[in-house]
Length: 129
Image (tube, rainbow, N blue to C red; front, side, top):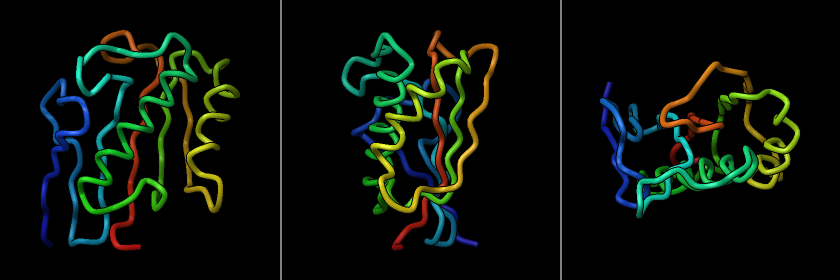
C-alpha cells in the first residue's frame, strides 16, 4: 500500500493533528472533515448552516484539486450538523455541488463542532476517475 498525505495551501490550515487528506494507492483520497474556515483568515465564515456548508464544500473541493482529484468524484460524503433542522437548507447547497450522480452520503446531528461551527463535511474521493 502506498500512502501519501496531502496538505493544500488553498484550504485553511489544519486546526489539529491531522492532514487535509490521505491518498491511498493512488485510487482513493480520504479528506479530513472541513469546518467553514476562510482559507486566508482562518476564521469561521457564514452565519447560517447553509452558508457554512458552502464554505466546507469549497474547502473540500480545493483539497481534492490540490491532490489531483475533483470533489465531483466523491464516493462518500459525511455531513455533521449541530442542528438537524438545518438539513433541508444544507441539502440544497450540497445538491448544487453534486448535480449528477451524487455520492453516497450520511448526514447526522452532533452536539458540537470545533470552533463553534454549525457544519462539518468530510469526503472520500476517487482519484483519476
